[in-house]
Amino acid sequence: MPGQSTYDVAIIGGGASGLAAAVSAARAGQRVAIVERDVEMGLPILATGNGRCNLSNIDLDPVRYRHPDIARTVMGEQPEAELAAFFDSLGLMTCEVDGRLYPYSKRADSVREALLMAALRPGTKALTCTEVERAAYDESKGIWNLEVSRPAKPLPLPKKPLEFKALIRAQRKELRRAERARETLFARRVIIACGGSSEHLAELFGLPHIPEEPVLCPVACLPAQGGCPEGLRDSVLRWLDGLRVDCRLSLVRNGASTWTEDGEVLFRAYGLSGIVAFDLSRRCIPGDTVEIDLFPNYSEHELAALFARRAESFGDPENMAAAWFTGLFDGDLSAHIANIAERTGGHTCASYARACKHLPFEVLGTTEHASAQVRRGGIPFDAIDIPSMSVEPDIAPALSACGEALDMDADCGGYNLAWAWISGIRAASASPAR
Ligand SMILES: Cc1cc2nc3c(=O)[nH]c(=O)nc-3n(C[C@H](O)[C@H](O)[C@H](O)COP(=O)(O)OP(=O)(O)OC[C@H]3O[C@@H](n4cnc5c(N)ncnc54)[C@H](O)[C@@H]3O)c2cc1C
Image 1 (cartoon, rainbow, N blue to C red):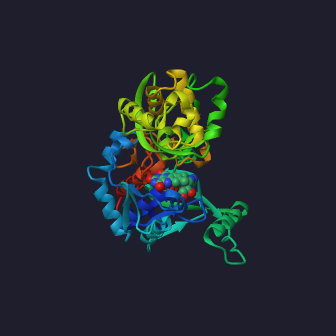
Image 2 (cartoon, helix red, strand yellow):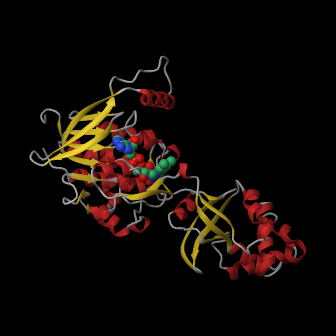
């Protein structure tokens, strides 16, 4: 029966957005239950930013988000200042690298620990290893009844001390074979903060759902047709595998450039990787062309003139072919550029400049999905009141959603975590005070 164990808010998912919501709700004096299916809270945070956690950006431009207007409305006029105050309140000192914000320690565990310290206060119940099996809203009492399952007994601890990652692996193994028991949680409000796999919970709560697909991952491609001899198309990327270049990527669709970004590309045997390719993965579709510009700081005309001056002292490209790029590029990349130039204008400075400015690849799709940083799709915004993050009451009462559970994704650079923190804070403020 509702009573002692009735929480003001039950948050399903103890990752980035769920912990931000928990901190805000707890600070507002609410009794909070966090329902986390993994063995510990906050584990997804540890993997972010290669273990350093790129937790936000100094310029949270809404255009970086899948739905800029929604991001603008939810995040408000000064999200950077709001997040700075939030991090300060957690005792989390930050530092900036090229516009990206990191914890001063450059350690993701600092972020997780600061959040846990603020979230897990008296009055907050942290239920790990716990999954919601059924959800029913009792209209007469205005309370959600959540039937949850969790291990019938505490998971056995390993016999010898283990370092953190090994301990987590061991505990997950124990969790998979643990016998489970059911109990009911009562909460006046529920926040769905389960990250990028929200289909099951959407179904449980009767919410619409857009199928999820991985983004922020490498892009599978081949040299564009006609861009190199047909017999070499399958081999070029194998030769370039592992090579990194600073460049500008442009996405070309139906002959028009629709997006460009500068950064480091990592050639892989299957396509393109690196942060700028991850950002490309949010925008490209099979059949698009990606052009690599190896000299983004020069126009094609300026580059041709530069190459002409180089030819005066170094030698004529006509006589040297790929060897002309010695001292500029790796040998395989040089051979590929010379091949393209040969097919499009011969071994001339102008043609070499054009090839360096427009190295074309045909997009086949996205790949390496296991390493994707975000999933697109989830609970659609037409089911959500903005900026409160509450589910529209005609769909479900006293229910909110935040973070990646919603159909929001953004570029690399701290934008996704910034969304998680702010949407979590907004979802918590929609919850009733005690
Ligand atoms: C490798 C990697 C690196 C990344 N690096 C960055 C970065 O540097 N900067 C950045 O901005 N973004 C980064 N991201 C993206 C960022 O981690 C996510 O956008 C963010 O964590 C989303 O927050 P969330 O709370 O919505 O989901 P999560 O942080 O994923 O948390 C969801 C939580 O819910 C739990 N859960 C799921 N289903 C259930 C259920 N049914 N019941 C109970 N609990 C459930 C999960 O176990 C998890 O703990 C990275 C992602 C990855 C994978």
